[in-house]
Amino acid sequence: MNTVQQMKENGVVGAGGAGFPTYVKAQSQAEIVLVNAAECEPLLHKDKQLLLHATDLFFQGLQTLMGLVSASKGIIGIKKKHTGLIAHLNERLPVQVELCPVDDFYPAGDELTLIRETTGVIIGPGALPISRGIVVSNVESLYNIGTARPVTTKFLNVGGAVEKRQTFEVPLGISFQEIIDYACPTIRDFTIIEGGPMMGKIVEDLSLPVTKTTAGLLVFPQDHVLIQKYRIMASEKRVNQIGKAACDQCTICTELCPRYLLGHPIQPHKAMRSLVFHQDGAGENEIQTHALYCCQCNLCSFVSCPEGLFPSQVCINNRAKALTKKIQYQGALENEPHPLAPYRKTPSKRLKRMLNLDLFPDSGDLSEHQFAPQTLRLLLRQHIGAPATPVVSVGDQVQQGQKIATVGDALGAEIHAPLAGQVSEVDDQAITLTLAYSE
Ligand code: SF4
Ligand code: SF4
Image 1 (cartoon, rainbow, N blue to C red):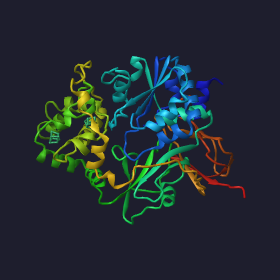
Image 2: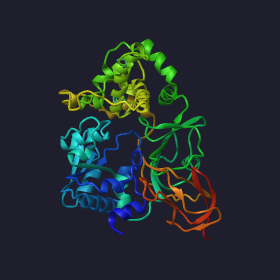
Image 3: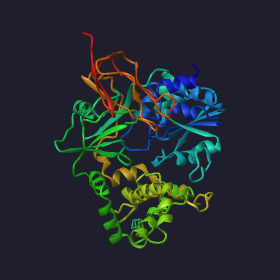
Image 4: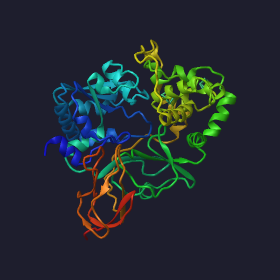
């Protein structure tokens, strides 16, 4: 079995985003492998902890991927404020790999923004980084390549209003509830955000399991400003009503939009204007296709808009409509970046202050705690592509690392048992394991 096949067999996916199967990227040819280590979401630290505590495996994975795509250079995009970690990495840098420190702004970790910051290359709207000879990878994905083992655990942060504000390595399939219970919330009435505060989502059901893309669980007071914003954004009707009533077309949302600053054809203030002028009328399709270039960073809604409106959600809703209608943007695709882009970065400090995130210490050291759940629920779809098909049945005994579901030749990722146990349930969504622990 060659290295790409092994990567596929081990079920490695993009651990920082939607879970795109990594073996597909590994089959391309590129000049640069860019490591997205910017970790620009406040309160998240798992990538930095991996870089610090699993440095060799991370570099092993990076060198493996560089070899596969024939890259002559590896670049690690990391915030320059992490001076201790940068010194640690500098002492161990393999040949052909360099560190590229970037400013502390949001969203420095937006893939296309980081490419521009670290290489100067502008990726055109709708184009992929590989079109310019660049493969971008997440820190944890490279760690998973480096271990050369089936992916059975996930690194994630627990943060916010908890006693144990740490990074944990947990078995896939463990429930959010079990992790939150261990972290000990310090408040009674809380709401959980899965992911980072800027791009996460509210968790209504704590029995949900950790998947290969779970990056964080953040505990917030129910009346926290972010929770209130997310609650409003869940209602398209409310978003549109207050948008129509209060948007004064000041254009600040557009002027600070990271994708607009890259020269992409997205202007969220026009999406807001469309709420009034384009309801099922002329121009609606055009506005909706602009939204295809939104990276959903939520900067416009959470920070930029002085009226507290939600242009990002209008863009997200428009994007869904454009995808449903299968319409595509027809305008110019090679725009120049905005000349003032370097001066319009939103500092992370300001963002944290505005969103009352300074309420919580921004820390997340790696914990040695090992969870011992009674059951694990492994979702069959933890990745982009086809859901996996179970290859085990109820009653089967499985060993740690054994494959329990496969996608065969389809795009997707194999799924393995994180721990030894017995298959207690199989349905069209998941495989449940009841675990066996030796005394
Ligand atoms: S920043 Fe707010 S008020 Fe100004 S155009 Fe954008 S949505 Fe409207
Ligand atoms: S969420 Fe807003 S700021 Fe971010 S890319 Fe989309 S329109 Fe621009």
